[in-house]
Structures are given as C-alpha cells and as structure tokens.
Length: 358
Image (cartoon, rainbow, N blue to C red; front, side, top):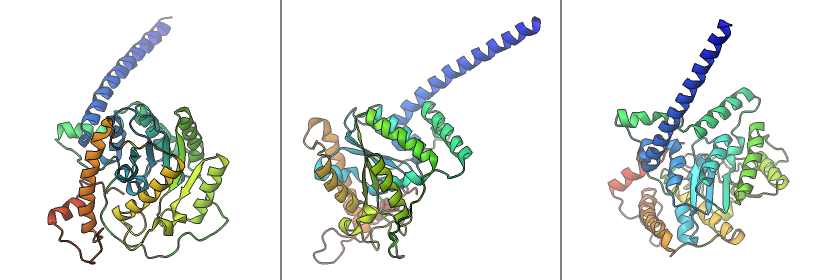
C-alpha cells in the first residue's frame, strides 16, 4: 500500500513538474516569437521568412510562394508588384523539406488569406526513399519546431548573450543574387516516358498541403523553375502525372526555356543550380503574365494600405539596376557599353547581407 502511495506521489510530482515546464516553455516561446518578429536579425537566415511574413499587414498577401532555395532565387515579388500590382511573398528556405513546407503554409495562413499558393516542385523530391525512420525523425523535429518555436529559434540566445546578429536584406522573401557561373552541359530535358518516384513522405504531406489550401480558400499552383542541376524529364513526368491526378495546375518552365528567355551563359548563379537576378527577372516576368491571364489577381497599386509596397519597390529597383551593372548586364544596351560601377555596389552585391545561402 505504501509503495502504491509512493508511486502515486511521484507520478503527481512528475505531472506537476511537466505542467510547470510547459507553462515556462510557452512563456519563453511567446517572448522569443515577439523578439524574432520585431527584429529578424536575431534569426539565422533559414528561418527568417517564418517570422517576416508575420510582420505583413493581415490579409494583404494574395500569393504565397513556398519551396527550397529555388523559390527565393527565382520569384521576385517586387517585379510582380511593379508590373501587375500583385502582392506576393516568398516563404522559401534553403533545403526546405515537405514537412517544413506544410508548416510554413500553416504559419502564413494564420495571418494571411492568399488566393494562390505557388509550390516550387523541387521540394517534392526532397524526402528520403527507403529511410522511413529518418523521415519520421524529421517529421517529429518539424512538429516540435512548429508548435514549440523556441526550438526553431533556439540559437537566439547567442544574439542576446554574445551580441550576435544575422543581418540580411531581401525583398518580400526574394534574394538578389549577383554572381554568374554559366551552365555549359547542354540539354538536360531529354524526353523519356520514365518517372522519378516521389518519396512516400512527400506524397502524404502533399495530400495535407492540398487539403490545407482548400480549407483556406487558396488555389495551388505547382511551379518548376529553370534548374539543370535539379530537374529532368523523369521528374517532369512524375509531377505532371501527379498534377493531373489531383486536378492541379502545373507550370514547368524547364519545358519553356525559350519562351522564358533563359540564357545559361548569363542567368545562372552557380552552373545551373540556381538562377541569379537576371534569370529571376525573366522567370518572374513570364510568371506574372501567366498569373494575370489565368488567375486575375487584384492590382493593389495606388491603394492606401499598400503605400509601403511602392516604397519598397522603388528601393528594390534602385538596387536591382546597380546589381545588374555589377553583373555586366545593362538594361539599356543601346551602345553596348557598361556604365561605371561603384565599388560599394560591388561590395553590397557580393556581401553576406544579401542571402547567398544555397
């Protein structure tokens, strides 16, 4: 009897301890979230978009873009704003896994009601085939990161204790990337009837993502951005079949390189893995025309609530033009000569203040 009472007492103490711990964690988590939202320099590059999207005016974003580093290297919201008045935000992360894509969308839907979600499809091949334990581990880790953000921002203590910050400039999630390393290996979209298998974890989470978008009244567009290092015809076939099976729109720009105007001598950052600023502008121009034709998204230019967007677009345009000069791509090619470039522009373009994480 005494043993039973002793066990009961210890169990009660354990439950009480866990309850107190949870209360403490919730309190710390709320403080960390507020600190990260107010000053994202406290957050390392990969997790910035998680908090930056929460700074946007509620229900002001019409397009959310998710995916790995191809997403924030390829789609420029400021170009969409300048040309069409579309409000878009890129919630991409380097190496974003499909579990992270789902929770990133949950995070965005908490304050936004986008009409369209664009998923860059390289993420659909990031799971591990035949490694279910690893996939389960990554799923549990992402669950903890999402529901207990202290885990996602656990390194924030370095910012306070060691006066360490992670400054980084981007425009609504888009990274201006200036380097040029040409892709020279030729045609990478060689026709075949074969398909590349999607990992089971991706298939499962894609079902959840489709449902999440439906519940929040958002259409889902699958987008493949030009990348010889990541795409081939087998992947195209797989995504195309998936899109048809689930009645989704699929736009694969790897199949439309001429229409997009991609020049692999000038438009890639790193030999065909990611696009640079020049390539991203071409992709975004093509995407903007597609969105305007197919989705009829509202034009918010001139509206009072979007004055800040116009100011940011002006800042973006100024930097973009300077960086194009750094890349030796002059928008005005009438005389074929390049304008003089300030050393400060070169430094800004190549510095770590602009997202360069691959």
